[in-house]
Image (tube, rainbow, N blue to C red; front, side):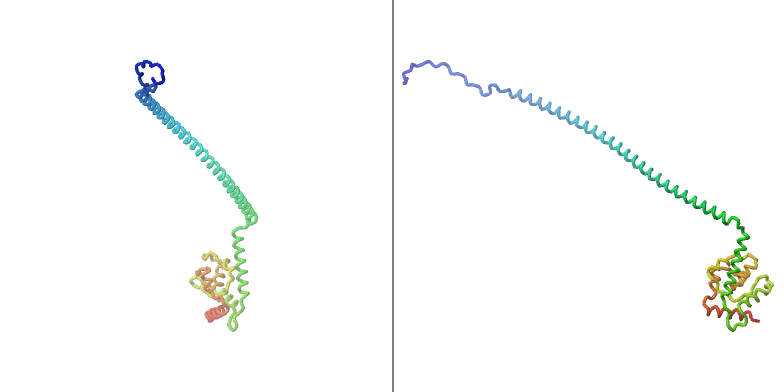
Length: 240
């Protein structure tokens, strides 16, 4: 030896250290991994089932709450509608009651004021009003100048003549213009044989069987020239 140390005897060589010493067996690792994966899958399926059950339970609860709130809202709307309907019915009932009271008061007033007037009195009043209206109409007319007879004389002469053999009064006299307010006084029953009806036919220039209406009255002249011409024509017919 170069350094002068005594030589020594080398023993048998040692075996090298294994690199996988202390590591788990791969087959065992694979087995544990498969078991763990199965466990994880089982937990996943269990969690999914639990979530489905919870979701279905929550859906059922939400449906129940929605139906309950829907019924409550419907009842509230019905209650408000019924209240408004009751208020409107009360208003209409009060209006109807007030109207019935007013009608009753008016009926009592009319019965108290005009209850004693009978049909005969009303007929007599109508006849008096008709005579006054006819007299006022005749008084407003002036006799036609140059005519042989005046309107009043023609009227008296026509009313003094007896009726025709057939029983109908066919005498015509000059037509006189009537005021619009007087037309209602002469609308009487045509079958009334009273002298008042005959006077009305004479005043209107109609026969006994002619209709006393607005159409018959409207055929009479309205202007002064037409009135004078019509009066002359009627008076010429009355001359012998």
